[in-house]
Length: 255
Image 1 (cartoon, rainbow, N blue to C red):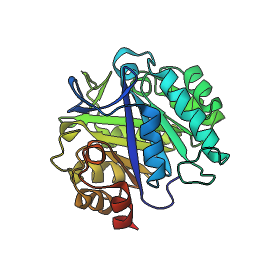
Image 2 (cartoon, rainbow, N blue to C red):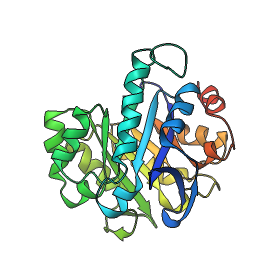
Image 3 (tube, rainbow, N blue to C red):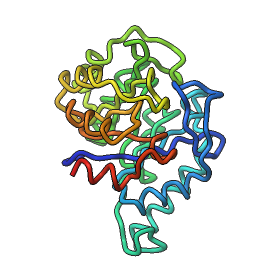
C-alpha cells in the first residue's frame, strides 16, 4: 500500500453530490457536482486512488450515498476493462471508502463489491475488535480513521469527543491489524489555510503502517510538508476543487 508517496483526491458525498465541509461542520458545505463525474475527472488527471466518503453516513450512521458509490465502482470496473476510460486505455484505480460503516458485515459487503479499503472511524472507537475481525479475514484492507479536534479523536461526523490521543490510538489499532491510519486534522479541514505537521508527525512516529494525512492542504508546499513529516499519502479536497493547484502539479512536485 502506497509504495511511493501518493496524492489522493477526495470525493466526499452528501445528498448525492460532491461537497467539501469547513472544519467538519454541516451547513458549511460547498457543492461540486456529480460524484461519478468527479471521479472520472481525477482519474483522467492521473489519480491512482480515490478517497470516497459518505458524509451522510458519517453523521447519521447509515450510508445514504450508496447509489453514487455503486456508480463509481461500476465506472471504475469499466475503466479497468478499457471501456469508456478517462485515459483512453485500461486503467486500474484503487477505491477507499468511509462514512457509515458500522459493522464487520458492512465492511465485508463493501470489500466483496470491489472496495479496496474500508475506512473505519466511529465503529473502530466503539468496538476496536471490529478492526481485528475484518483484518483476520481481509488482511490490509482496514484503514482506521482518527479525526482529531483540539488534540482529541472525535467521532460521529466529528461531533463527539472520545478522550483518545491520536498517536496512542494509532498504535493500538496497528496492533489490532489495521493496514493503515487515516489522520485528519479537523481543526484545519476545508479551511485552505495550511497544514499542521506536528500532529501528523506524532502519529507517524507511533506506528509502522502507512499514515495518510488529511486536512488543511492549501498549497503544493503543504503537500511537500506532509511528505516530509512522514506521511505515506495525502488526501486533498478543497484545494483541488477550488483550483489552488492541479492534481498533476501536486504529483509532479513529489515525484
